[in-house]
Length: 318
Image 1 (cartoon, rainbow, N blue to C red):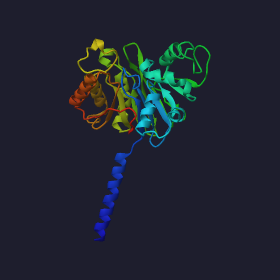
Image 2: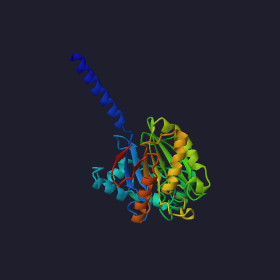
Image 3: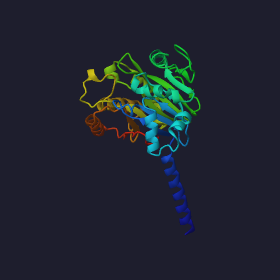
Image 4: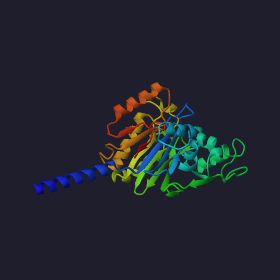
């Protein structure tokens, strides 16, 4: 009887250990905006932080204030909108300078606190030249034309170089993406301890863009997938499969997403993407197109990936 009790205790402890490992998360994510247009209150912006902290970095900044208010409404945040903006958001990673990815950053800059804006050189140049230029908008940065208010520190990211994110306890590596070649977008590989999350700004498929950017990105992250260190990929699907290639404008369809994920699986090993989290971003209205995209992704998901559709203001974990 004593031996059986010991066996039962060991079994329970082992089961609890396996369960805790399975449930362990590294990142918390709060979507402030999830769509690709036309609702200006719900455009691309995702807050990411190490689990159990409020040290968030914004992945793009199409919608900020309205997204924070939605998160408060859903009780994701239990402080004021101003406190989230000024204290919780430690900085902004901007994938490219299209307005649906930066308008929230621009409009909210007068109410914001001092922090860092990170972008690649081409993206930063566009923001300084066209937005924070002391003409279309006051220059809240410390570089570029006009009078420098110096609320924001503009930090240019070197491609494929690990950069510490100030006050956020995470690092980032930037990789180039093609978004209507030769226009450049960016993928951000976020690291927290030994775990990673990958966020892609707008991107077209290599096949259409005549580019190797996605293959190069998959090659870089395939070892992390194989080692189960990459916790999820944020990637856009803007149009259903019926959209002609010439009208993709540097975006993905369900068909092209699955083609790209098959390339990643080939590099990481057969079965490596089973139950892997794919977070779908940048769905474009109207509603019938979004429904069609979701149905097509469900039908074409022959890799067994876990497809996640983030909801504005609702926290999830990776």
